Amino acid sequence: MKTFRTKKNYLIRIIAAIFTVAAVFSALIFFALHFYNSSISYTSSGFAPANDILNNPYCGWYDMFGYTISDACADTFDKRTQDYIQKSGSTRLVLLEINLKNFNNTELSDNALAQIDRIFTMWGESPHAVILRFLYDWDGKAMQTEPDSIETVKLHMRQTSDIVNSHKNSIYIMQGIFVGSFAEMHSSHYMDTNSMTELALLLDSLIDDDIYLSVRTPQHLRTIFKTADISKLKSDGHRIRMGLFNDGMLGSYIDVGTYGPENYHFSDEEYDKKGNRSQEIAFQDELCLLVPNGGEVVLDNKYNDIDNAAKDLASMHVSYLNNAHDLAVINKWKKQTYTDPDGDSVYNGMSAYDYVTTRLGYRYCLLSSSFEHKNNAFGGSLQITLKNEGFAPSYKDFDVELFIIKDDNSATPTDSYSAAANNTDIVYSENLTEKYPASTWTPGKEINLDISVPLLQIKKAGNITKVNNYSIYLVVRDKISGEIIKFANDASYNDYGYYIGSLKI
Image 1 (cartoon, one colour):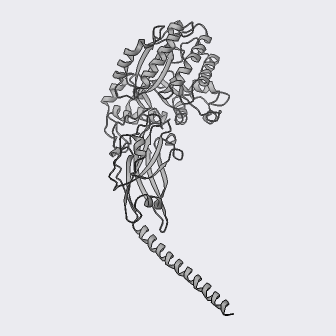
Image 2 (image 1 turned 90 degrees about the vertical axis):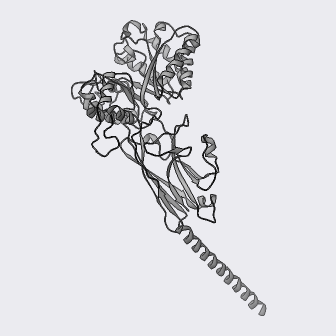
Image 3 (image 1 turned 30 degrees about the vertical axis):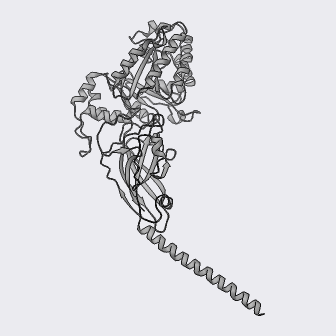
């Protein structure tokens, strides 16, 4: 009996000790949490907007250069290409016109194909993305120089497609379907509905999906796919990638034949007509959130006066323009002044030319950041708001990443992104590419990034015994080149990206 009571008392003492330890541990956790939570603070960086010309990839003004392919050796155009690359200067886009007229009734020779491959190789080593146009004419006489048979055009498409696909990292867009004067899909033996559709769909089947295709008018696109319903174009089994190139842009009420003069009701039965200007711009407003649109502004007239042009370029989501056509319009823009409806905008008072330059394509501007931390929680939420102030989205899904850096580490970011990503400064990073794809950052709209931040994990990675300061950076980076996409803010950036704010834990 005594033994039983002894064991019972011993068990009671053990239980009491456990409760005592638990109480002490709970108290320690409470005081640790109190200290932990009371030490958390966030200071946002100031995000001053700027009207700088950013010169980001895949958008802006483009240069144009031409080659007439021959049966000479592969390096025939090396010197010319080097000169072209030097002339192209700081532009990020180049339109290469590859003239195949010397082979208009025969297959392309091995030397001809080698020339084309070498041209693409040399341009691929430059900082330019290539807009590509194969053609048989650049004198407005396609009916005289095109192949006598559509089968030869198809053969040339098949012969060149493997070379084009092998350079998909540098070839951004292919314009046209090889035929027509200047390859602009008019004045051709092969622009009847059946021939045009046959060539366009063959090219679509041959060219890698990473390369965008473009046709001359919205009417062409609707005719090829037999619908005016853009939602159907998005659900045809693969991503829509056929955009537009308008080489009569802002040239008249009908953009020099791009549109029609009268209102036309689009339907699934009647999709192959030209709508009037307002209808076709509305069509592009939807379509060109998905695919690129660009070309040439032509013929000085009221439609390219900057007040009108700014509205239409934004609605058409134009991301690239020829820097040499039409100089009458371009020089007019250099003399005109842009007046923003919002008088205190950073763009107000710029030359019309500089205004258009800043807005071609995508243009990301950081607006604000904040941090929310719930009491007694080991996590927080970082909100970053930015806006795409360009005419268009990006049609490339850039890498989007967040870095949190421990401030009191003596190491500094290096010039190498891979080295920076492995640097011991980094206590936390998160890839946001899939959750917030840049291709969905709609022009004119704010983009809100809501990012969960594991504070305890960061605390452990830094110094658990004392309060530390951490810098937060956001970077948007081209997947192919690794180039940082510049923001329209008066702020510096380093290998980690743009400074967002400081977190104290």
